[in-house]
Length: 447
Length: 183
Image (tube, rainbow over the protein chains, first blue to last red):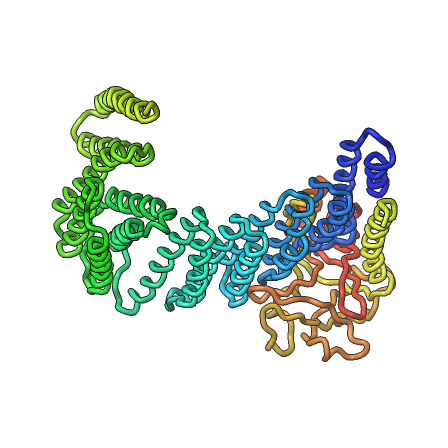
């Protein structure tokens, strides 16, 4: 039946005119029948479920010629999905990293995808899944090599094809590699080798102006920093808790924003991206630190390791700001607005660093910082006519108001009154803000 | 190459692969030696192939195999089998089931196998378990529960496995209290 369906597919595709779709469908059906034939044979001979990978491989590989020679994209999709499944079944069954899968994809499947003009993305996803799956297995050195192999292969493909998706995938795969290494050393050693691919990734990002990949690489660099700090905190017997991570992250956010500000005219392309990520990081951390309950549990920076790390980051940020002021003196009022925000964040970070036990004061400071960020973003957005900045200011403001409303009134009022009042408040406030927002954006559009 | 030739090529490849797989297994069944192994079964489902019975053997545990134990996880091992009773090779499937199950007498590497040794090839998995590729016995849809019930209690379950001279094993029959399970 399988062979008959295969020939019928060929007949309707090429011999009999006018039924190409039927022919393609029959070729696909023959590929499905081929899989069921293999499954049945294996069932007859009681091949154990631990060898299911063999069945999937015997299904996927022989249908590839159908996809290649008869330009059948659906059969190619079937084979691609089967190979992704095979990769996981094989790794699980053999308890080993499956190098055959990336070799097969790089040497056979991706070139086929280019020829057919379809389904390259699903194979890239398969490679990423293979790379990230290395993070979840019991460590063996072969898994970190597999992650590097996949990352390098994707980077190679980027250099050949010059398509950003390969570069983004390579960047993500390198993230998987650092996590694998972090698990591998039982979080005892920092992976400084990662700086080599990271430098290469940033080089290509800047050379080819790859915005999406820059976001991934910035995240990658931040993650690397945290994964380096963590093992050293163990050496100095210091505790890496939520507050510590947030204060570090707050300083990193400021540094990112300053990097955005210091971008020269030639690199202006990336400046908004750094500023956006820096702003979002600072706003997010300040928001999380604005909860008193969270700060009350903070025992402070007992063993000085994190105190020094945070201080060093803040010092680096201040140094960057001084350099920036030397090269670009504040001329516009928008620049001054940014400086006010940065000064507020610096002060808040330093205060929480030196007086971690003063939870109430720290709460007030963090709330003030968020309020300042929201207000200045609204005015800044209006000034530079940026809907994104303006809207983000509104979002932060609304979030702050709702959060504090819930914080304050949840304990004080009857729950029913609370919900009625909150509903009314949000309806009226939301309608008013939305009206104002639309008015401003329409005004900009008209101009 | 014309499309007609390609389609014949693909059909030929599929036939060769399917017949090759069948032929390989049939050769073991035709030329191998019948051994009987004691089991401990459970009954799950295979997402690809429906009902089957998972089989565990006494020789599945590393601790149940005498001989040197310097093999590590992932190693390919050859377990030498000998009949526990007087039968060296059973004359029929039923008599094989009635005979004493075979027992493991040594664990060897490939280069240590001697002429005349009856061995079964396995791979050491995690937590000291050896897998031989004979751990699944497929049954028709809905029949698994029935077999499971009959396996419960004090039934003596044995599996007739055919092994070739290279140690490859294939399940031939499943016996419950000496009776072959009819599918």
